[in-house]
Length: 119
Image 1 (cartoon, rainbow, N blue to C red):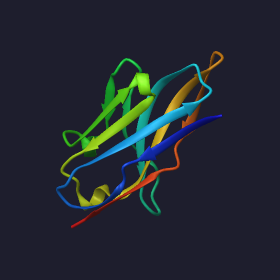
Image 2: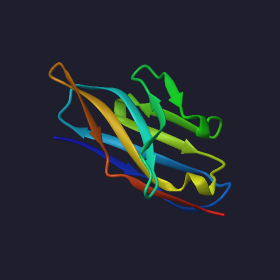
Image 3: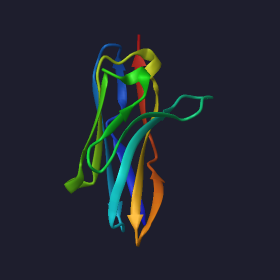
C-alpha cells in the first residue's frame, strides 16, 4: 500500500505565497520522479512541475519564475513553493509519484489539496 498525502493548500489573496507538501509512505523501494499537477472545475489536469530523483526539474510555462519544486529524498517528500499567486492559479493541486516496487514502476496520486487565490 502506497499513500501520497498533500498538505498546505488554502485561501489567500493574489500576490501571496503558499508552500505545498506531499509525503509518500507505504511499501516501495524507491521513488523516481515526483510532480505536481492541478485541475480546475471542468478542466483537464495539467502538469505544473516535476522533479527527478536526482533533482532535475521541469516547469509548465505558466508557473516559470513563480513556482519552485523541490524534494527531500530522506523524507520521501516533495514540495511546491508558490509565489506571486494569481487568481488563475486557483485549482486542486495533486501530487504524483513514480514508485519503484520489486523492479516495476507504478504511478500513484494524492487526494489533492485546494488552492484558492482571490483577486
